[in-house]
Image (tube, rainbow, N blue to C red; front, side):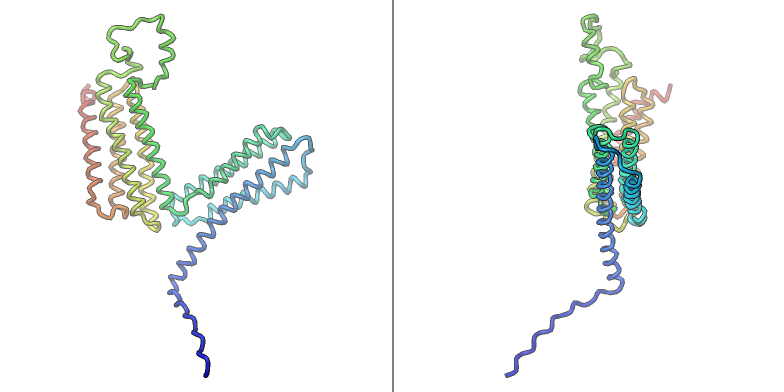
Length: 343
C-alpha cells in the first residue's frame, strides 16, 4: 500500500506592495535607532581612551603619530553621531528632532570640553578636571538610548516636563503664602541676628513686619488668591492635555503633536512671570498684565488641543470647564486691579 504524501506547508500570502514598503520603512527606522545608540557608545569609548592616554602618570605623552590616530578616531565618532541627527527625517516630528539635536549638542560640547582640558592641563591626575570632563561625555552618551523612539513619546516627555515645572512653581507660591514669607525665609537669619537690637513694631501682623518692600499688604494677599487659582488651572490644563495625548495621540500625526507641545511649552514661562510679579513690592498692574498673558496662552493651548485629533469629541466637558475656571480667575484679578487702571 502506497504511503500517503506528506502535507505541503501552507505558504503565507504576500502583503500588498505598499504594505511591504511600509513594513520595510519601519524596520529601517529601528535599525537607525540601533545605529544611534552604537554611535553614542563609540563616542563614550573614545572619550575614555583619550582620557586614559593623556592622563597617565608618569608615562610620557603619546607620539605625534599616535596622537593623530586618536584625533582621527574622535573626529570619526563625533561625525557619526552628528550624521545620525541629520539622517532623522523632518517628517518624524519637530519635537523628536529637537530632543535628538539637544542630545547631540551635549555630546559634541562635552567632547570639546574634554579635549580642551587635556591640552590645557596635560598629564595631570585623572582625579581632577579631566576625569570630570570625561564623565560629562559618558553622561551625555548614556542619555541617547533614553531618547524617545517617536514623536508621540517625545511629546509626552516634553509635556511631563512642563507639568513638573508648573507644579514646582505652584508649590513655591503656596509655601510663600502659607508662611507669610515671600522670600521663603531668606531674610529670617538677618532678622534673628538683629532681634536683640530692634523691638517689635506696633502693627506687625502674624509676624510680618510693616515693610512693604519685603512683605505683602492686605490688598496684595487678596490679589494673590486668584493668582494661585490661575496657576492651579494651568497645572490642570497641562495634565489634561498630557492625558489626551497619551490616550488618543497618533504617532503619524506629528504636526498636530508638535503644535500642542509648542504652545504648551509657553505655559511654564508664563506661570513664572506671574509668580515673579506677586513678589513684593507688588505692582498690581504688572500682576494683571502677567495674568492676562498666561490666560491667553492657556486658552490657545486648549483651542489647539480641542481642534486636534487627541480630542476626538471636541465638546468634551473638561475643556469648557477649564476655560470657565480660567475666566473666573482672570475676572477676579481684573476686579482687584481695576483701581490701578483708573489712576
